[in-house]
Length: 100
Image (tube, rainbow, N blue to C red):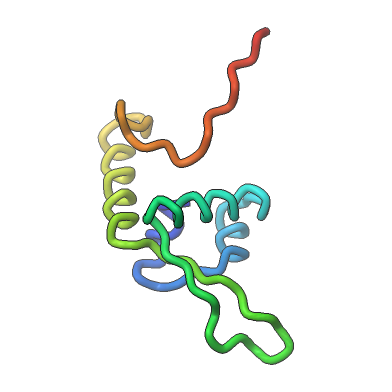
């Protein structure tokens, strides 16, 4: 998610566009965007002038802190297998271990 937002630079993205770009459903993308916004990694605003006949949508872009996190993630991915470093912030809960 962070890297997809980083690809737009300082531009704003619609959640729907992120869903399509990432191949994920809205029920996955929007909770992550909400958590990123709560943690100060993403800023969000309502669309100012939506096209006629369509309600305003939220727009998303990385904050300065989010852009720095994206650079860190990209550097880690280039440096190794892409696994987050020990102590790196988690952006989504881990799945529970299966007993079988």
